[in-house]
Length: 379
Image 1 (spheres, rainbow, N blue to C red):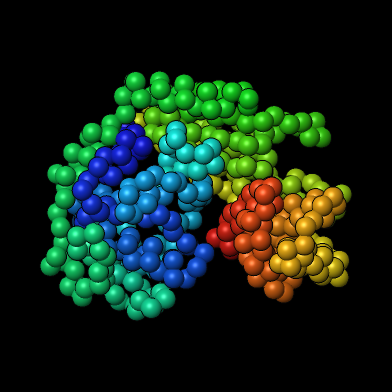
Image 2 (image 1 turned 30 degrees about the vertical axis):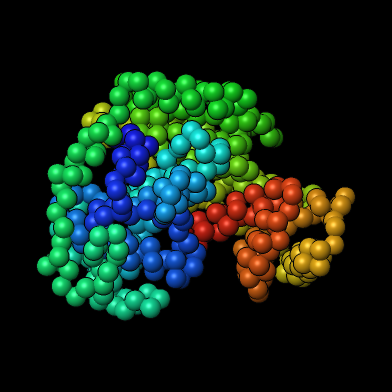
């Protein structure tokens, strides 16, 4: 079993990015340009390594190698993105890797591109990249090339050596458990060992709502690999586990004004097998609430008026600040009910919410965008 944090450290210890590894400060999959550049790097790394894994590390400063981290990213549909744009797509995995020096909500993203003997190429146009284009790695750059197979780099031995050095061991596992327990003292952390091999830790703040038990601020990590399976700052989660599986069902609290209720969003099942492997499956459950369109148009106007006051640098207080914290969720309800331009207004609110001293509204904004991304992927 590979300790992914140690693997990232070994990759960063390379003199520079090379034909089997690249690093990025961040990726922007919600924009066409960012999506195209991400796909370009996946294509290049895949084509340059037909016999071994290759890697993309996200959350690292390019020049200094400083680990700054990125927000937790749900990878459940990222393979679908790769499949939809490539001929002979590689199999990829996006993992959220915990680093102890980062803030609680930050991780390092690790994209592993599996060995792929077929030449990967774009199956349709993407931004300025045309259908049929092939990329490969030349040193630290991803370059277009029409006959990429002539320049394939074979790094099998080098990658095998790096992965071997990143093998998990008892000390790393025990240190990981203790670190998790210390980081989550206030949320009753616990651990479970599956099949005498997998050590999973989880913690959350307990709530009782309508007689049922939920948890917020949930963090779930597979300690053996330093992978964060789940993290949500605001949403509510129900947890069930048995001898073979750990199951978490995520809920979101939605409503207008005082009428709010919990709606199931997604169920994630982590199934551990006796042969040293595990599998993660997700079931999308969300059915968005429907509201009167006239009322939602009024809500949209109220939200826009609040943003206009921030734009004019008017200081808000009292009830206006409370409404501001609810603003992203209300925008999302408008988006889910197909109110015209609601998504545009929501996205435009980001810089104003980010600039606030109280981070509550901005954290809520990021959670809302995460939910909308899930809905978009599902549709």
